[in-house]
Image 1 (cartoon, rainbow, N blue to C red):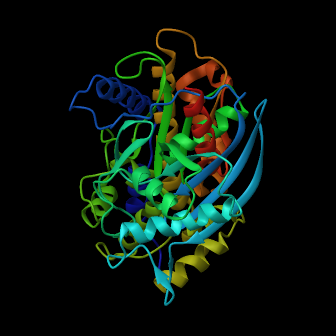
Image 2 (cartoon, rainbow, N blue to C red):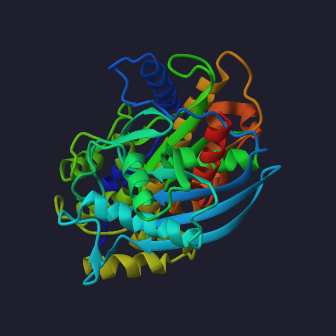
Length: 430
């Protein structure tokens, strides 16, 4: 079957963000940052204080890190050696749930059982050492209300977690009690941070000219060092929860995806850019092109990545993937078009995220000049999706002109562990 050319071109246009709209998105993002810092309810950015600035790169000592962002939990022991260098001394990782063996995630589990399991991992990481004093930094990637660096109270479980007795509680208090039960009164949790903040801390420790950190993976979020106004005095890292940014125009596929989502009306930017949703958007557009509007075809961001990695003239891999999911056989001309649809969806994602980075740069810079700096990004989409680097640079050039040469993005792998250890060191210093 041949695809309708008029409909195809209209769908491509719906996923295209031109320079004017890119600039508008960046300006609206910066405006929401300013409103959020001022405490205005008109901002769609949460602008959560982290109670930390940036590391100096000279932090030294041995520190524990608990990386708790999903069902796979890690405990690491780092030795920070100054000059932006470090060594990982030990690493323990285990899932919180093993089918048929144990489950500390479900509603039948208690918070006490869950945190006792975590304390056991800490015991493994220190090889049963119950004497040496250790400070522990905790990357806790669930919605929390925080009033200081060590006081994060879980608002609500996400990611299918349901253990009882944790919501509404201060997570480090639960951890501290479990450590005592484990005989680890020598281990003191002294800081709690978000995974995006951890990415920025780890990158800034190694590369000093880094003031923005982001996750570009299944989900999306950005944080930055706020130098100017509002709640952030002295300069403090602000976790924007930027996936919730609302002031961008969704197309009809975004609207349909949101209507079918778990939390309708929330996380507008994330649903337009994050890995969890790119394949879904492609599936919705694909169904309409096939004359099956309203049908749901389940593609993934990995499918799109594979299509774009195949640069052959006949787009054979795109045709193969589409046939596997939809059962439809595409002629070469249509396979090439479908690959271009995947490209349009991915490029829109990259450009919208680039616009939020530029809005953040404008906020950091104020009335001054943009200084040379890195933007640290962790996540599978950033690391593995074709086109990210070149399209990010192109968007920066459109919005920043000659200043674009002063800014680059860099991969910051594994930052959630190292960042927690750095947070523990900074909290001790503070």
